[in-house]
Length: 188
Image 1 (tube, rainbow, N blue to C red):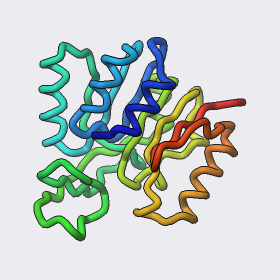
Image 2: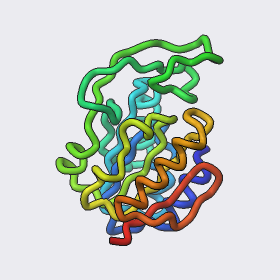
Image 3: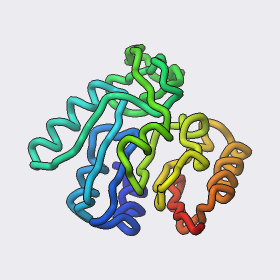
């Protein structure tokens, strides 16, 4: 589960990092990361209330100090979110292959506001394609490291190239890629 994301985060994040995670899901990747690198802090955002319930129990059972919040990256308004009951692939896009989901309203937060409020230096992100709309590198002030799963299967290779170029234009360099997961590091 979240193998590539964990591998890259473990390789590049460290005990001094203040991490903000978008798309926490069940909390498995965050829990593994906490055990592996013991970051200075981690705050996790997840839109699916069923996943939050599971992640809360996982963190509590393992005595992990995680600031877990319900919500998603967005424009600051409430948005329709499709929460799949099997936890997998919940997103802002209505599922075409799943029938077992619930449409809910979730609070969204602007990236620059969250960065200003929580002062992270690292981002850990898997938001099932919504990164094309809400995870803009030019709004990542004071962010040095980004582990992000990109989703060309959702938005195509042209958008993937645009996102990669946006990171470069914002002073980030692609350091490593595993399948669809990328590690960008600020160079300027």
